[in-house]
Length: 252
Image (tube, rainbow, N blue to C red; front, side, top):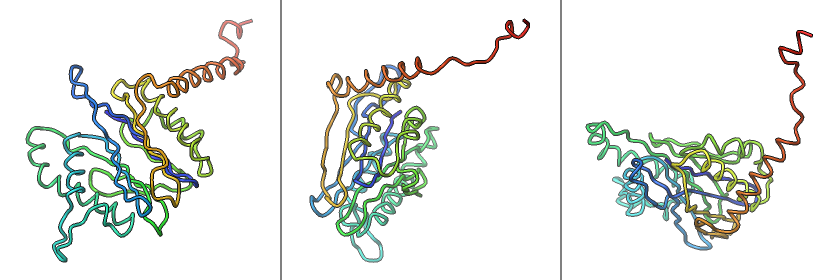
């Protein structure tokens, strides 16, 4: 299991991904799931993956090596896609190519072809965008109404984002909220864990403002976890108890 989230606000883009993979209780490993492709000043795009690790690695390798266009002979990659939309289409195309070659063998072994991606970034001269690409290769785009997308084990972190996130949130406040969302997920699912990879990109910069790995025991993240737990306990204590009469009180 994994958890990745992407947040697109007015000031820029935040992408966060854990690194834990779990193939059983005795087979827990660390693999990077947030991959960055950059030509500073010209474009920066990032792909976060969830699902079958072998499938996601095959898709990423296909995108890195490129796919030949049968009509033009051009090799298509994320780094030469003319627009973010066409780059998202290329991720979908790569998924379908991998499914065509590996899908039958996985089906024969009763293994699900399960993969999804978050894809975000900016190409110079166009606006910053964020997409979620599904197993079938189709995708949706993040909007200003709901300025975040999630893949993997998303249900524990979603309430935090639902309550706190909106398009005008300051960029590093968006990062803070995303990290609280990650902490909420880690506390409720052992399949999501450290280290955590973080990317922050300011709009129009076309280069990383922050590309950082949070290791276990890092002071800021440890403090964030402690403060969030304390804040939840304080909020709970400050809410009045329900005023409803008990069954025994109702009889008097």
